[in-house]
Image (cartoon, rainbow, N blue to C red; front, side, top):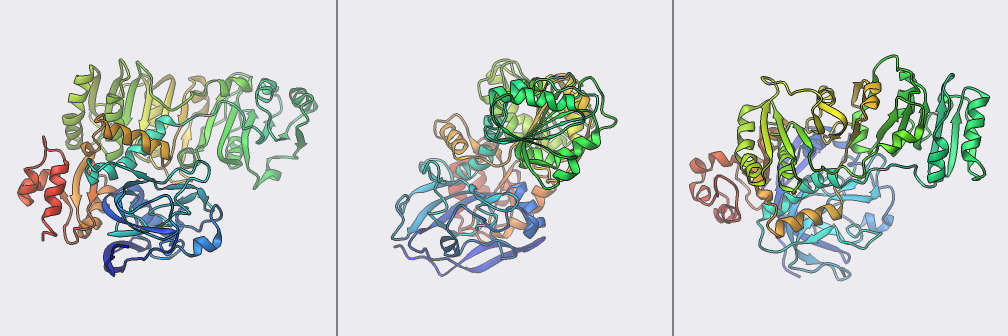
Length: 565
């Protein structure tokens, strides 16, 4: 086994808002089932700032509940849930430098991209993740356990092998690009969950229609009903027919407090009732609101954070058939030929990626409106995205929404990149009938936007959101990188060593960066430097840029400076 140093430089979160640059953190030695990754590069993410402020309150900082044997979990010294100091950094590239005797799927010398989202390891409110309750990449060496980084269903590795050719920055930034990819590749559900829990609620004066079609297509495991009269009960019984589905009548919604359902079908228009039903939704649940010609008495407080993190979906109809709501669900979140796309918050790091993706995926006749409130960042985006649009024969516009309010009702696809409820309202105003609204921004769970649900249903708008990525998303964007169809370095706005991480976090939180900030852990004392400042600060590195953009040659020149002051 190669000799590892005794100590290393690392960034640690030690409490809410507390960032420490530890110059003497111990380098953990691998046990029999473990391996050590030498970190090449790490991207800073807005999610890192949310973790910093929430700390123990973050759902991914809590303890793993299942998915790995307790004795195995106890052996992982890099497992740091609760109030233990945490090394963040989930956008990570590195090379395996040490493995334990019982490691069978990884070998020393492999260069890897880290898939960070351990969906097979649930916590109380989410799932485990690299850089959250397991130490991340903002250190020189990180310990991982093979028992937690193999997909239990497929056996696929969470450390994805990559070639030596791409720069460390290009590999590290595949993680946020994969999160973008997931939002388009997401499979949307247009039927009940097989064997799931179905709740049917009907207010007085509303008839039950379309339930037979839903249950006939996919059989739920059980049905709970809150009904107003015997005629509704007879309709439910008729819909279930002879399918021998367990069905019970609950007294009222209050009696269901604490229960969770996979599908909720509501025949009614009471805003307060809809909000109560929202609290009964399990992760990935669908609520189907059947207004039956009635109008809600007010706007509905929709938890847009749960759309993003819990993958909740709202469907429905102003008519009277429950089947109509599910029938309007798109197969995926993918773009379509001819889409009029608007990206709100387009000049930020993630919005930037959405714009570039829309212009480079080969969709025909796509028009992209990049919307932001910062002229300088919009100009930077236009310098990069404009030529890509021209090369693809597509339309792209770059709009400051403060000075040029976007036109209403014109967009078939709207992406929201900034977690502000007012921007959800803006997205809805811009949407054409049948539009998809991608709530990509990381709204905190509990963030409620007051939405005109009747208008959303009448126009057939579909709100969706995703969080994180899957192995297949990583593989998809890695393939594009390795075949020259994607240059993730186009996202780089600044570089840093360990000493600049505080400034990098502050810049990301203030949304003052026009792209990604990449940290090189082996550069201990280097502060954050924007690419626009390189010519003055590090001219030898700046000389290796290409058209002002980060390159592998620039990265090699930077690393050769050996901790510049």
